[in-house]
Amino acid sequence: MKRWQPVSVLSDIRRGEVAGVRIGGREVVLWREDAPTPTLHAWEDRCPHRGMRLSFGFVRDDALGCLYHGWQFGGTARCRLIPAHPQVRVPASIHVHAYGVREHAGLAWVSMDGAEDFPAGGTGPDNVLPVRTLHVKASVGPLRHAAGIAPDAGIAWHGPVGLAVHEPVAGQAMLHVVRVADADGPSSPALSRWAEQLRDAVESGAGIAPVMNGLIAGEMA
Ligand code: FES
Image (cartoon, rainbow, N blue to C red; front, side, top):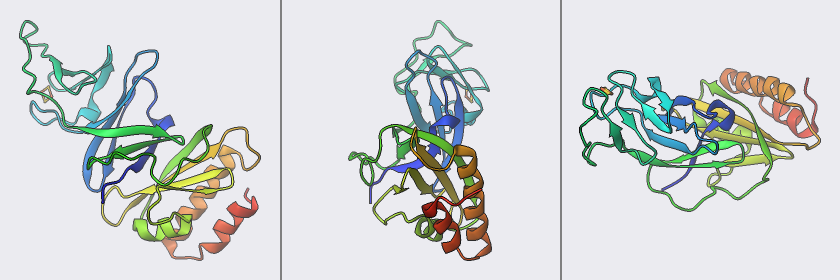
């Protein structure tokens, strides 16, 4: 099934920044241009020259530069400069494989299989702040169930708090937490601590219900 996956909170990919993520065992580089209104990109995390991870690279003049030999790739994913041969007109065939990417609900959403309909699982609130992303040593199934995410949805809302999950590799999960700005409810630091409690409960196999009830009731440290 084609789908959009929530893969990172947006606060982890600010203007001019680069981040590597795993999605279903595949390496993906997220990077944001350094222009005043910078576009977010999601590409295969592999340089077409000699395979260096592009997530080790750098952003300059709205292009992602590879750390190894400095080849630069613009927003179209095509190579636009080979520094060792600056006079060479780079063939269009030299490009990185690009994926679909959207920004929604404080999260970066990636489609690796050509999904077009967006957003996944409904619209949700507009004014949303990222809180944090946590690694959870558990399969996505139990975590999605614990977070109340419906099978065909990408995110679950519990009042002003949004919970999303994606699978970096089989048997592991990433939990993404966001909240509606200016809404009554827990602060970002309190939500961050609560998310750690949920992670610990899922990893230990302890009862999840008390942790989720604490979120729903707003009873958290
Ligand atoms: S491996 Fe990327 S420029 Fe050479």
